[in-house]
Image (cartoon, rainbow, N blue to C red):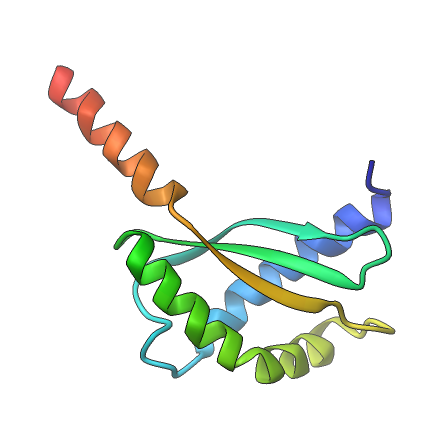
Length: 112
């Protein structure tokens, strides 16, 4: 079970990472991207960031490649904004939950 500090820090990181992702100029990191989930380890040394795209899993995988290449810049910006003693290692993982939920929504609309 995570502590209060870990959960508060993960929410702050999620908000700041979303803002940083919007400012990236990498062509692979485009479209409607969102951070679905952020898993911060208990000792705050590793952070798994689950990225989803409205364009599907392939676009999310492509965005993950761009984010991984820009991880140095992302960590630098995160350090300027959050002032943590030690920043966690960021691991970006593609997730298709947005596209999956949009498909379910379309199916439900078709039933009406």
